[in-house]
Image: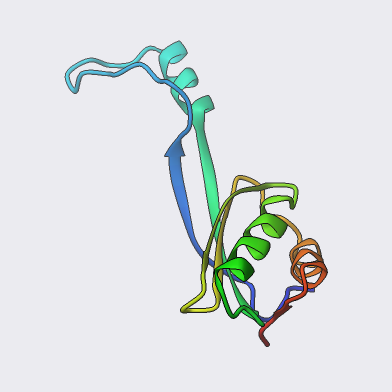
Length: 110
């Protein structure tokens, strides 16, 4: 069951490893195309709304807790907006995110 306040904000295609550059007039070979496609990964951004953060130390605690969740690639926490933006190649489970937040002493906003 999805967490009510965890929303998938967007999907981003990103080149995560070195690829050969291809000139516009040049047609890539099947091998070059396969190499480029194998380097392409879809990144998912999830926004969590967090209750209980009051200072930069809270931001650090939430960042550390969410970074430890399997699948999370990066975390940006906003004290002003009371949110955490997560980027991941494989979306972590809502339950794992909720537990990480609660174990750090905070809660997800409903």
